[in-house]
Image 1 (cartoon, one colour):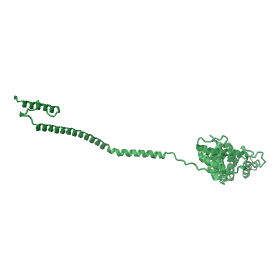
Image 2 (tube, one colour):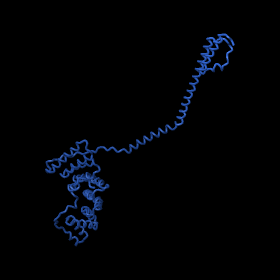
Image 3 (cartoon, one colour):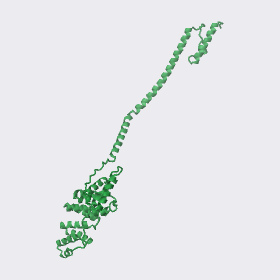
Length: 361
């Protein structure tokens, strides 16, 4: 063992540097490394080169660790890309199915959307001379006119309220025998309330009095179609509607066309004198004497004092050459002239139909 103090100092410095290197994990401990054979102290150049080598080694280790981390992130990105590639063929069909579903919903909503009903076109009421009306009728008409203007002037009035106001106004015109004005009002009421049969029923009578027979027929047919809907309306109103259609056909010189409504009326009521009389007359005109005798006999039993029925029965028996039966129906003065076999006048129908001012059930 040498007693040189310089060698002792160099050995101590080497021990300290090896301990520092061991603390950073760079070098193994000094006692595990082979001792250097050079007894001389290391120069400053040697120590600086060793420290620079240590720094280079640190950089290489840090770069290797960062490269290992980057490779991990690259592996995760590559795995996500491989997962996307796996589901990529399903993306376009899914989007197409979604778009097709939305399109089908749109088409379904468009097809099943409620139709847009345009507002009905109303007709104007012709002017009339109020001075020619009776005072009572003029007063009633004035009240109905004011009520109609009040409803029409209210923006919140519903179609049903407006239709009722037009109908009430038209009723007063019918009572005043102002058929054209009444027909205009009832036409507007029917346009505003398409499900009300009474508006068309009264419109048909007004048009018939105005000699507009085709329009009257159309209006009554539409009213009858509404009356036949379940629950069907009162039998009397339906019978009168069929008799009305028969009277239109007879007035238009279409006797064969009148047979069907007469049959329909008698299917509903066998005691309908008008239908019995008119059908019996048609049978007589076509030489169907037995059928004529059957219908006219039933009408005569219901109204034995009716002069038109008795006169037609006389003609039937005379044509059948039954003088004994004909003498029973010789003309005689009647104490109770009946007009029941003719269609009722519009004002009488109006009074009965509007007695309650509600649709028949």
